[in-house]
Image (tube, rainbow, N blue to C red):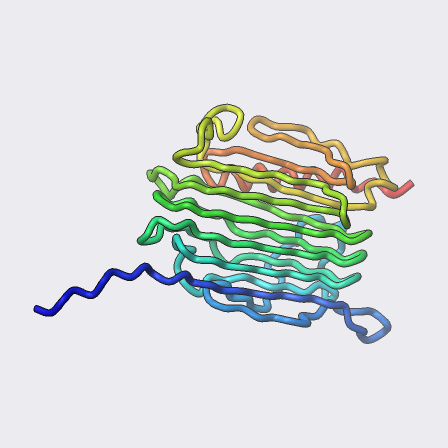
Length: 284
């Protein structure tokens, strides 16, 4: 028997995806939001999509050809520990984009104890709209997943962003997840939140964080027109395990806890529906 080959660490999977949407001239003088750049590597695969049901916040008038629709699909398992993924999104002035996921993201441990990382940067241009509705991130046992998202909104830009996190698969203890979301209006911070849960994070199961729940998430809505219509974001009624926080901007943050993914989605959808109703009054 010959000499044993020295063990080699699994190389990092480095992948990058880029998406840009711009408004182009259309028939009758009406513009259309078209994909100007679409580049993706596995496991971040971007594909054009069509509307699959009612869009959230109907008052934004996202139905029709003026809105570009893209779905993000997983071209490989994971992310696994050691993977380094980057995602950049740009929505040009006056354009509109609805971005969804095809399925949930399952964060898995790697063979050498390294963390997985995904870094996302987003720019939403003047008077543009981004609706980003990713599916949940599932923190499988043993994972160490780091996610960083930075969003820059130019004047008049609107944003709806949902985040959902499931702590482990059914009957499974979760891994560790660290998430940070920073949203700025130009150079001014609007929202900056960092969350760490899982083994090794003190107090993560306490009442100030998850309260023992296995699903947690948020819905952030930024709509500059609220300033003129309501002198600030509309009031939304808080429910059990749900918090509603008006932000400057103006914006509203809905956060929720639940026992499972279905309950979490229902709470966030209820928050979005009530925002729709309370913001339906005509502008003064």
